[in-house]
Length: 173
Image 1 (cartoon, one colour):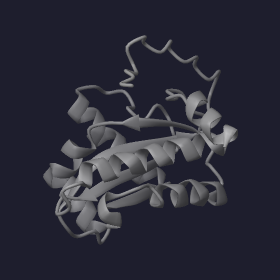
Image 2: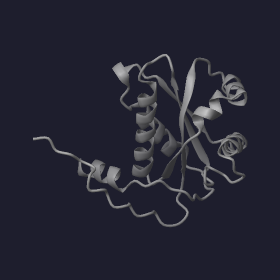
Image 3: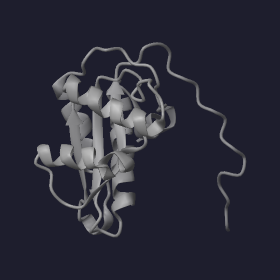
């Protein structure tokens, strides 16, 4: 158990990646961990779209950058983008998708892979372009974008953790 807790404590958001692709076996391990995230009543409202296709990855990057109002790559050069969407028919969909994101990032760290949660998936997949993209992938339903979990090998040093604030935990005894 100490290894699991240490993994959670040492995981950091990575903002610079090598272009090397992650082996499929490693990616499958990370994805499997994502599918085991807790969900409201076990209804599994989220889905994960694993994007390793460079053309689609770059299209998503451009869509995200446009929403952010920049020309830079919001995915920091990561070669893999995992899109987490969740079915809005479930009242817990936002929480369910967030737990999937957490599992994906912790699993990536455990596998020696860097990760970062990139926002604006909600806006991306509310747009006509995003809806058409989902339709072209055969994904139907009332899904909301929860986040993009970008993955790749870290280019440089892993960042240090910021000190934890004193008022993080309150005991009621």
